[in-house]
Image (cartoon, rainbow, N blue to C red; front, side):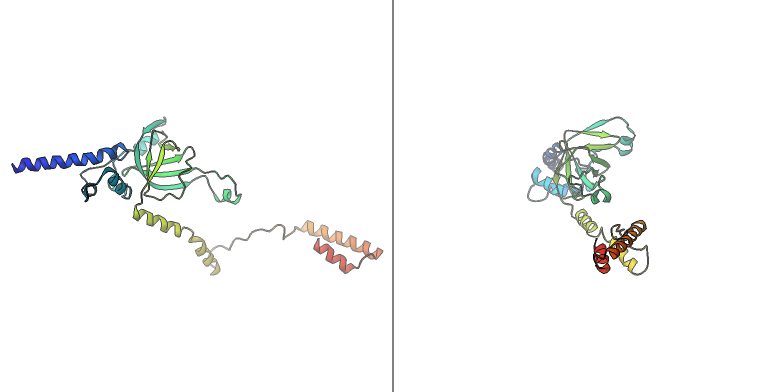
Length: 257
């Protein structure tokens, strides 16, 4: 009958969807609702996609549109004082990355071996979590763009609600969410705009005066100047008496010194 045929067709479609989603779930992807329009559009886009092709499309899609919950509730995790673990694989999306160790003072010393401590904002599409670089992750830099997907693997310690990441429990799987990437690039481009604006306001006589570096060598203190004057007077008196060199030459030499 037509009803039975429709039911069989629907059952076949669901089994086909499962055959695509099951391998992705094994790789750490979580889906809020497999029947969601955005997921269905990817599942049934011609030609018939493979799990690998579907994953490539998901990497470039904002996880907040389809991601299912895989992170613990932030408030509950923060309130939990004991250490617990998440178990991968879990695919998350980068919200932000910032080096919370570096500062302008550190940069001024030009440390040949700069240290860092990356702080990550991550989302599973529903909840957000904070993670830190608990041990060095050399393949991740501060320049990672929002929208990039990472995969948590093995055991991930969670201490006071903060995920502790290291090279052994995280990997970058990539992806570019175009809208997030463009916004990030725009913010990077204009992040230093406040300084020129400040200079313009100073030129117009508005705002605080410009900073002037104190040059200690160029401005000797009063005691030093007094000592130099007394020394010069003594030398002038001696040389004038002995008539060894003209006074004018002596002044020039002292000024050079």
